[in-house]
Length: 65
Image (tube, rainbow, N blue to C red):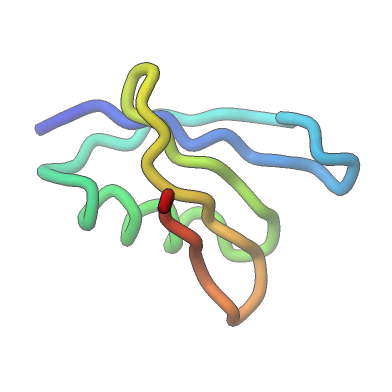
């Protein structure tokens, strides 16, 4: 299991909260972040590595290019 950090982003584009997610890999961490983050945007990080942006609403997520 690896530790990931989900940072919630408020309407002003600032980090408003954060929580830890434990997951086997990036895909599992993104899935867990989606389950937690249904109403606000957020960013998923593993240490200093950006993993994905989780957007609110049905359009879903954007992973780094």
